[in-house]
Length: 130
Image 1 (tube, rainbow, N blue to C red):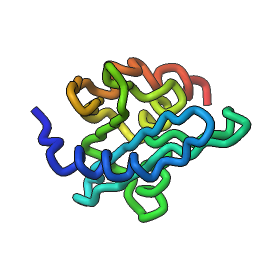
Image 2: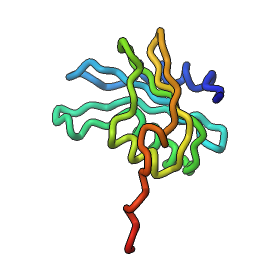
Image 3: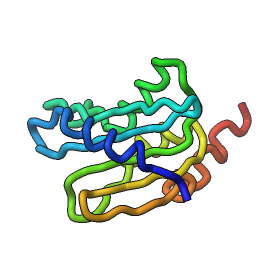
Image 4: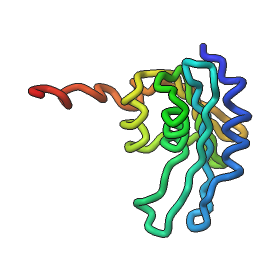
């Protein structure tokens, strides 16, 4: 069982900084680097929704910019009825950095999984023949 206790409040805090004027859907993510640092990200919307940056990818970008490329856990939070999971694009970006535990949480409920369960065989076949 992964200890998410330091990540949960960090994810909620950064969620409050999300820029979501169109959807009003605020998401926060806290990514624990192998270096012990918590990297945080929130969603940043754009009028062209396809250009929106998800909280999870924002956290990855923060970590990589700081020089961290190994992660041990992720927490994703939102004020929804059920815990939300990373979107497909976020799953693929996260998979670039390995398989690790993920806690998806609301203020009342949570669900723990792994990236490997959310995106099985993420790298299988991609580099075949290269």
